[in-house]
Image 1 (cartoon, rainbow, N blue to C red):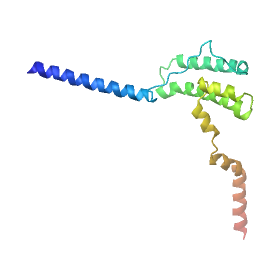
Image 2 (cartoon, rainbow, N blue to C red; image 1 turned 120 degrees about the vertical axis):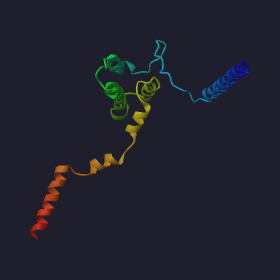
Image 3 (cartoon, rainbow, N blue to C red; image 1 turned 180 degrees about the horizontal axis):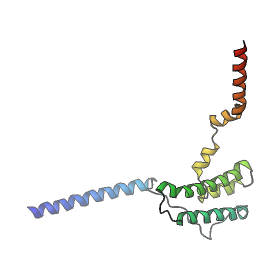
Image 4 (cartoon, one colour; image 1 turned 90 degrees about the horizontal axis):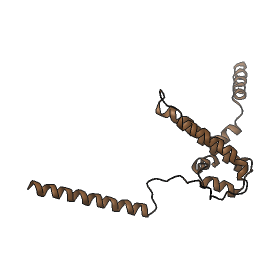
Length: 161
């Protein structure tokens, strides 16, 4: 009886594992991958026109990123050790964003290439492109000192009446 229970247990475990693997295969087959591997940058990649101008800056930021990843994180909290990495990736994305949207120094083809090859974060750039009500608020409202001066003048004039 114990032998049969053990065999039955193993069979049930195998069936569950088999079902789980089938579900994984279906999910991956439908396009919902568990993880996305970064693009491999090979020598066969054809770089668009204008790449030579931005390549040194991107290589420099890439080297800074490697140094930040290899830096010792002893004595730091986990979030503190990751901050430089976020800062450098943010800087790299901002560089490409500024080149394309602000200075209009690179072509759309080069911009799309940088996004495709993961030199810049597409979602972060999309966030920067959105117009927020806060950006209008600071443009319309006068500086804080001017507002405070206006308030003081109003208080003084109402006190005199």
